[in-house]
Length: 111
Length: 115
Image 1 (cartoon, rainbow over the protein chains, first blue to last red):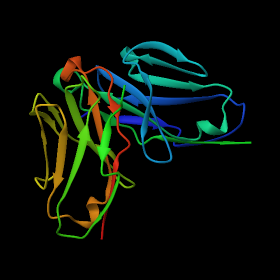
Image 2 (cartoon, each protein chain N blue to C red; image 1 turned 90 degrees about the horizontal axis):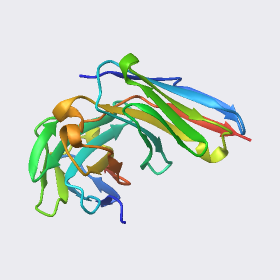
Image 3 (cartoon, rainbow over the protein chains, first blue to last red; image 1 turned 30 degrees about the vertical axis):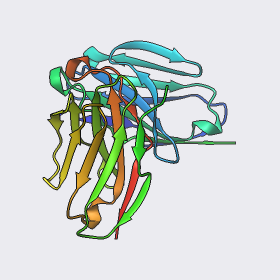
Image 4 (spheres, helix red, strand yellow; image 1 turned 45 degrees about the horizontal axis):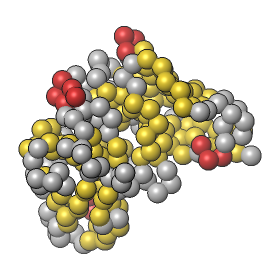
């Protein structure tokens, strides 16, 4: 199956700093999503981005499908950005709905 | 519109018992999939249902089963519970299936503790 690697595994930032999270995947994908898991466990949708670039406020994401990676940018980080960020991918055809998750990046934003 | 609803949110069982978890997808969504999250294994795909049929299945033993009803609501069942089944079980819904899946939306999860 598809392998998904996220880096870095842990990240500590001061409030106001910028960061880039990376997701590498091993095969062609039809589905790629970025999630933020809140302290209660719910996965909050950030981006649905199998290719291209999207922006939503302080967050933006880019997926280069031909090179099999995606980047999540967080600018002017806030303490509320703390938590675990997951990248998840779905393969081609019937497996697009079967998401494979990376191990996540744990982000801590300090004052 | 309402999101994905999972019940119960928390439950405690003992080894050997069985458990049933419920998931109501977003209105209009026809695909429901289930995931297990543990500290050791991370987030793993269990199975997916679309139009009351299982379309994809992960690598879990037969003790894990599920079904989908005509209104798209889904249940998953774990029989003969083991300590290792303690986990957060997450349900996701999407409009389509397979290559037409689009974005998946997750519920808040059901946290199962097996004693």
